[in-house]
Image (cartoon, rainbow, N blue to C red; front, side, top):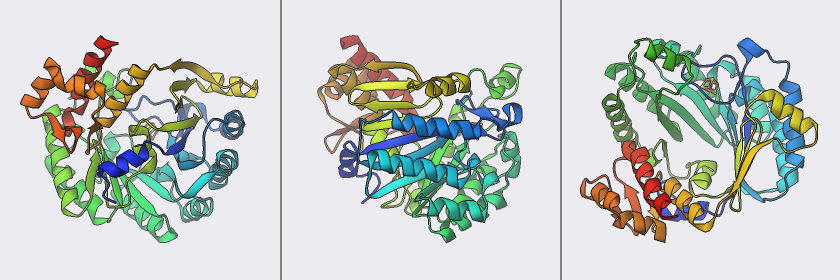
Length: 387
Ligand code: SF4
């Protein structure tokens, strides 16, 4: 099925999934504000304790299943041994069961990749890998704080294919001030020449509290919105020409390779989540875990869910969430009462008149994907004003 099909998006609203956050990273990248454990500062002494805590946390959850998708993100999941990752998969399968053909996916760092890791992951049940390439320009990679090279990415992709992953995805970051048009074009060409099943493209953003933000405040050049929009459009056009179709703002896939976990979350589907800073969504309850490793570990080891907070959404707030998420999809958001109200509002009409969004196939579609965040903000303020 085409990755941008409305039928696929509708089916995904019923899928159940699980997310596992693996927070360990070799070092913190200068642009990153995620909940991680920076091994260059904090070491690896908590790895085994963390795996035990995730296994214990899984035993505390019962409210979902069977699973259509399991996703390991981070952090860097490949900082764990394949046996540790496989033990978590096995625990999820035992606790919640999985449907036939379930997607079991993880993010991988080319720096960690070895033949034995790859074989261990496939043996442990993983079907999909998302390789954090980021760029094929070694200077840009260095500016992004990455120690791998373009050649390492190519060999990682080849190895993932050879060992039998069903889907191989590549992650790219565009718009670093040190990246030229030519280097982005080369990155796109090299990425597509590896024949990936899926590509995720993210614009570099300056998050408060990061090294990049401090550098920008001290006078370093910031990413430029117009340059990023051009780079994004360049990618979308080149990818489409080789059959890799945009199905969400940042995600592009060949037929049959859309990421199930991501489609399910954008469809406002239910997912359980485990690990540091993980967020889950069951029924109308959204919960989030502690972001500090000491608090997370202490809570789980005391036999408690490591919750930082939870909220139960009313029907209107839940429909608003579905609209916010659905606007990210290439096929658009379902025309619920909330969506229709937005379309008929002054802000909605202005966006339609400007050609930023419109109705297509009975859904509300953002035609200029790089403006999705702005559309979502407008939709959120219109629907919040009515609650
Ligand atoms: S590898 Fe990813 S999660 Fe880890 S510090 Fe870098 S950007 Fe953040």
